[in-house]
Image (cartoon, rainbow, N blue to C red; front, side, top):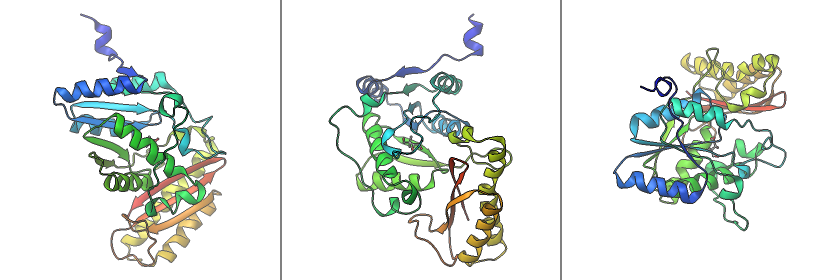
Length: 289
Ligand code: PAF
């Protein structure tokens, strides 16, 4: 008996070219297996792993992609220094018995001469796009490319990137992409900080101040539970929490959970969203109220 393989699961099959991934997906399809896709940019944490676990529960063949997508980063953003750790990622994916990993290079995904982009429209326009123009164009483009290469039955995304999940739903609906989108709950550290690959950038002091994002969202939920309906009043108190922690607010918004139109009075389901810079690190978080 090979005790090694009992204690450390075998690494998943890793492919790097579009031809290879198409081939393996076609083979899995032929055997009638339900395919689950978890697109990531690597630097995996418990949030990503919850998506993989959801895929494993619902599907028979799980594919994870690891690709730091340059087209969703602005010219002054952290594309170059974005954390990359393929070996550690593969071990984590192995521990969850992922079947296939697609980890292409930039040249593989964007060969010279590729010029087509996906523009999603209204739901991509507010909030994140003010600070990150072109971000969702890059996200929608790479996600559609991945959907075309990996025609899965179900694709899994995290609620942490709330606006992104709406952008992807809109794209799938508008472009008739036959993939079901699942959005899985935010995974938080025990103290409330939303898991993010960018948390590794935080110093100990910034890590402490970053807690103000989730604290402001909890306050919003408490205020609404206590009967407050005035969005302006809620946003003022959320901003106070963030200001006191000394983080630089990008936006604090209460919006309709499907359209992201801002709400003045809370009458039905609402999403609270925050984005702030903690030192040089830009973090986002949200909560459904
Ligand atoms: O959420 C992410 O990690 C990325 O935006 C995604 C969906 C993998 C596209 O690059």
